[in-house]
Length: 411
Ligand SMILES: Cc1ncc(COP(=O)(O)O)c(C=O)c1O
Image (cartoon, rainbow, N blue to C red; front, side):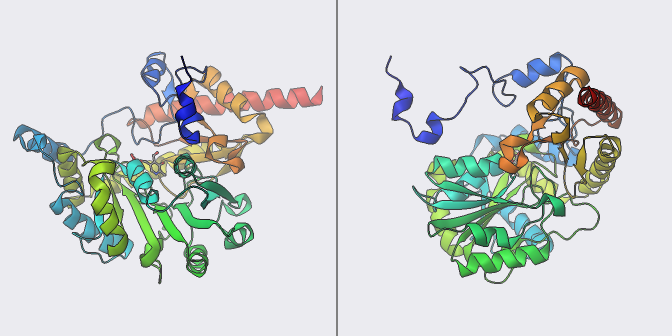
């Protein structure tokens, strides 16, 4: 048979699906189910409370009502439910300092992954350079490659808690640079970019006439009273920014597949014009559930308390292990550890799988600066007890690894 992949775009040709290689991809097929049946604790999916049930009752009820009344069998407009957009506009004014017209500046998407891709499609073409902080969410790079662009990795500063430094952008900009894609709060490092750094970045983006796509999927849960700044609200940025939001992470509604894009009239006109062919429409019942979540978001207070407890527990249990350097998360459901002193990152991931029965992510997939790190999703499971047990197993396994390394070094 001819190799039909030869006809594909390079990014698809190069993609590893997990069917033919021997890589175990937890995000493909039923691998997750198989691993969980074997007793592994999955701390590698950024999915709050996974695999347990934690949906607020009023959200479930609103979703079920739409299905039981038969309305769920019909489309909303491809750009999203008008009433949901009104609620989102109120939230944007309250939380994001964005005063928008709900019927002109918001587009509902089936999750924010599709929104992130849709935000980049109009702009990124063959040969365009896209600047992406490193490390960051792997889709930022993959989307760029799919669209024919080149990624310019812009390293974050680990010594300053993975802060963003605009000088690193200045040093790397090229004549072909068209876009900056930012994930704030960042995944995998779970830090929140500060106002001063974002103001400097905004000035850089405007001076170089770039487009900004910002993914704020993790904005709902921020710790220690750190200020969450929406870059689109800074002077001069509304004209050139598409902001991407999600109900998946902080609200724990990943399976609902609801996200939204927010941008100015000029860009939105084009997105509205192509929404049917690019995203279709978002699930009707899920949009009703999302609307209920915005009507009464008080459950977020509990979620913030739970995730702060998880963040603190994880930090306390793991940060003092010899050979581990740990960054205290400032947001969400992720913890990020430098384990380079304990060996190759893939060996540490394997060691945790084999000795703690915990699955975590190796850091390299998040960009070159992620090498030697692991990402632990501390926000999984609804039971604190089961979560604590998994973290204690990790502590023991990492302590053993650390002792073994020390012994080897002294031989
Ligand atoms: C930073 C970031 N953005 C977006 C997404 C996509 O989330 P969803 O499509 O469920 O909204 C993820 C999921 O892991 C993520 O980590």
